[in-house]
Image 1 (spheres, one colour):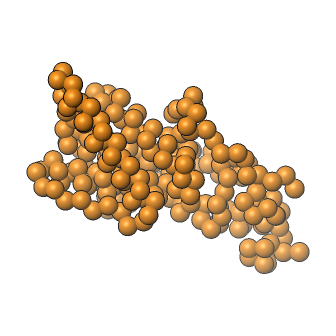
Image 2 (cartoon, rainbow, N blue to C red):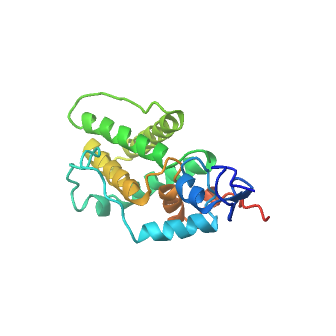
Length: 212
């Protein structure tokens, strides 16, 4: 009997996503790439622990890395930052197919939109991927609602486009550092979900691990 993925090596690890044993090499190379691993897979958890101790470096041409974020922006707008993070986690809770790449694409596009808005230019280019586009639209709608509520309260100052831009860049960079770069990674999403453990809207999906 050989590994069902490579059809060469001996299967040694039970893969909960496949429902059968695969070899250790395929587990390592296909994890979160072609295999949609459940978050409670023991091999995935072990791999993530290893990654935590070996932070990956980002390419120099990574978008938005050259932006200088004011040191006090996150502290000053903690509530909005938390609300944006919650909105992302909530979206992903009802869209289980969404991955870190979808979230990062939405944040990058939205940040670039607000960068142009801060200069007085209206230019919007939502992501092409459907899930990224949906999240982009959801965040736009949320920010618009927040501003509407602020405008209805005479004592509230509207969030500036530059402030929203910096918060989006901060979240984008956080996501880049939290994810592992694999196509089906959900490390950043799981991190955001973990910031709101008491929220019933973000309850974890039932385990997909099948006991052999």
